[in-house]
Length: 245
Length: 104
Image (cartoon, rainbow over the protein chains, first blue to last red):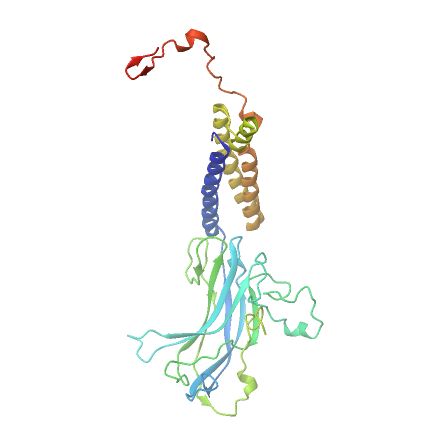
């Protein structure tokens, strides 16, 4: 402490200790904030058609196109240490031999829902306006939010939502598979601390997810009677935004 | 010239006295700890982590400002030099030997 340089080193050294301690405190403090996430996920429509993995492919595979309704209240996942929430909906179906091979799981839709304090990023989710409000002129203030008007981060209300991804199996066959499940998953991404994935059990003040699952069966293969318009996928916020045309 | 260099060295090194060093150390620990606690509480109460970040950084900046420059309050108790000895008595009690020959 006798000269300027030593004082700079001592102050900075102790600052790093304090910063680490405060960060550790923040990371632990999320355990104190109660969580009670709930969601209602329903299958709207599922169609299986033949397709190819890319334009020049000679391989023909079966693709499933799953439409769903989602009404989720995940607001309690947003506490002061939540930067963003990664949401995904997967379709999982059992393998041919469930005793040795685990079920297959494929993501059909996903979204990054930022907290109100997160800096703007072009890849984050923009919630579609509700149908009743679509006729009215969309207010500029409300457009571009990751939650419906009047909501808060964590509210997601989707009706007859198109998937983002069409799914297929490694074998190329997905029609008529039974006992499939549509389920909601999340990953809470904090400012500091640990990533937290979907939990179904109650731990301390954190309650598990209520609902967020739907059972269904993949239907038989359909031909050209399915209109191409019905097989469109949702374009996420990440498509072509923030990148050169 | 020497005087200018001496002044430059004083400014650059910014030395403080012993009492001042004790005070500087105490202030470092106290200010940083308190600003850390305030930052956490302010962020937790407002549920806005940016409060924590900016109060924490602000407190650190304040600590640097308070502790680093050799402020006058760190030099209130200068350590006095021993009085200069002059004449013959200056070498009392000091023995200097050169090539085994005692000089004084």
